Image (cartoon, rainbow, N blue to C red):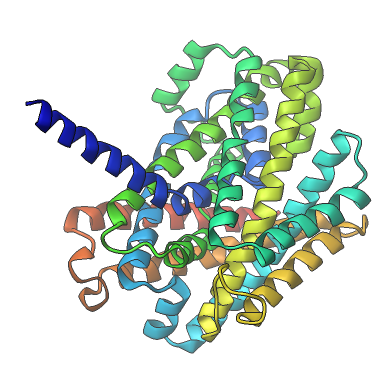
Length: 417
């Protein structure tokens, strides 16, 4: 009996060790989407609507996990990135159209991340003319001079720093009974502003770049069919943590700003508004979270673009390679960082227009990416025994249909502004 217990204990220890070795792609991809734009969306949702939209985060969690799980599974089984598979199965023309849209969208989003860095740094009294060059050099050095393991460790540390938002939510002293009530009981008033906010929450949680980055990082890390069960846990854990952080941001703003009728439009405005309402520590943690999130996304978004473009063109990719071995991969990454940070140094750039345009492009690009993923993952010759089951297809197609409908609605509201 003791021998059997020891065996079970050793198996569990090995399983935990395997999971810790595999963990990364799912956790990082889900959490990096809580970027400057995401923080702004959740902050506005809490400040303008109180706790009433917390229930939206439950179906959002399901959608996020379902879509990211398919990406991880395709990467582990085919050992190819999503862009590779799209080019091989749908042709160069489709790939080129997606490439152009993704490059434009991610460049605009990268600008938004550096704008978040500038705004949050200035809350702490650091000039943007110091913060932006320093942050640009930092994220460039991290990826170009590091390797996959070192880059992933830094990204995972960035995920840990999101805990600051959980502390901010606690310091805001919310009514936890109301929080639970609105989380478990959906309420809708069907007015334009509320519907637009719901669409925004869904749209900011699932973005096209995530699918390409996640699958590419699974391949880059060397995750295989044998490792896949552990990566699936990574995906589920990542989705859950990302949405818990989103809920914390919403709760912090709902508990403090909504009762006072405070109106905000961005994450940095939320951080500043929290100071007189919830105290300097809550405000500082919120601002520090924005800085971390913006810096995190400023590294990952250009990286996802470099993966996609180089996969689509058949060029060498991978963080483990040197600049000489993968010049286009690191060259594109460098160019996106220089442009993203450089543009924000010019204060008259119409950043809001750029951000709106990028969200519209996200809306246009997401539906074909999701449809392409479902067509690919159901091909027996690609996936073997790992195609979607009938039940999973029903869930996946339903999820995709809802995401597409909401994303197209968001795109329409953006165009109609």
